[in-house]
Length: 239
Image (cartoon, rainbow, N blue to C red):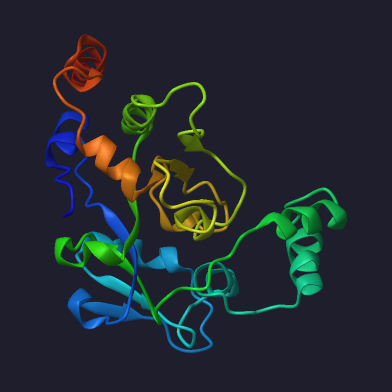
């Protein structure tokens, strides 16, 4: 059963709808759908406004938008490894050398989806079994609160609860998690190639299902009900 995030959202002050990334056998339960024409290299984040309106982006091996999304989310070989290195280093300048980029790409663990449909859009409680990650679109204050929540149950020897890895915006929504069964979060929306589609002070905070449950279970003993967060809200109300 999908956890209820309403108390968490209310206490932190998040009003943007949460966005789920699903891999499902049937796209019809996610209607209304929007898609990208075959061969059209549109960034998936160009559909950010559609997600906020309740529409779901439908991706398949034929309809995936930019080559990065095809590779990261659907396992489509859109470029040869060396062509990808040349593009990322020589054209876009994202690493200091081709050798370093090759090392990084060799560590990247793309997951071919179990089903043909990758869907990104509003949370659907009746499709929870197909949910992979949940993304909060937040301002810096809200990001700070979510960071506190992600660390609330984490011990010093547990897996790092929050990552801020190098990678494309779409890979930050799924591929950069090594194990989706671990309660973990990624600070995303940091890829300058996709930031044009987000408001200037908006970042992404993407969580696995176990982390989503932990955040939704924060109770009255947590910082959500304590003075630090209350004073932050009061300070912002005065500005």
